[in-house]
Length: 351
Image 1 (cartoon, rainbow, N blue to C red):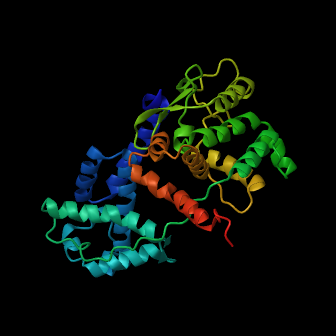
Image 2: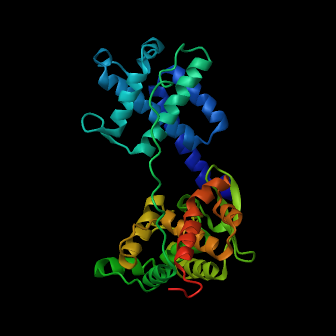
Image 3: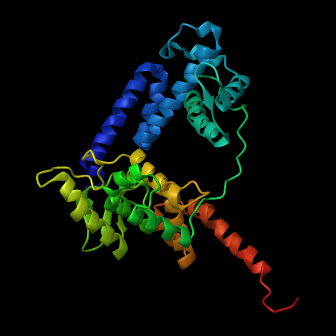
């Protein structure tokens, strides 16, 4: 169950395998940095750092004629010692937009995220005596992009979407026939998102043994690998029970050993992309003008919970935010909207 389930063990092994493959093509001095990160970070973070550092070294080869026929792992520390803050700024421009060779197009947040591993590496290299100077110290830091309004659904839109899923109100006859085969599964999926705020990664990792209908709990693995218990209401219980008994069981048959809760028509665990496609498909039919994803369903739940309780700490705990500031940033706009509405109310009847 949870992070000790076969699914999470397999996912970790796959990520470790990818990491080792990337490390085999990186300079040995970079591996020392990644090894240190692996001691205090999740494997997903280390893998992301490895990809971003690999991008940087490929950029060096692509942009420097002297490195034209060189392999990434052969780039020396001596070469890095000659890099300047201007070179780092050029790399940031490369990340922003490149339409030749290895194509890139990143916004401010994307560039800042890709720069974090690079800044960390050079800091590590200088701290441990691999290098004398850190070229990222004088490089420009990306300005913070203005935060977009969080897309959420209102109560009417939630009702319309659930009705669309439950009745498979899909315009395309071909798609409707396909959706009817998984109507209870899709209903359970979207009901779960809208009533618990579960993450899509947490959702696809669920096994049938993770559900306790007596206590109405789900045993999930949070972002970062921490195990947690999530409670659900009667609406979710009914949707899950209907799906498991009337759709999942007949599809798999009596002798199946499949442990995954949500399965595809191929009788295997649904992946994140498949769940995203389910949400996208029904949102397109029911919520016009809004780009709805599983994360937007999570935001919808968080917003409704905060509006009902006014307790930001409760929302943070339920959504699994380790830092309450993350929750506050996401839902502070609600209070701002309330203040704007209050300013327009003519409470004394004066003209």
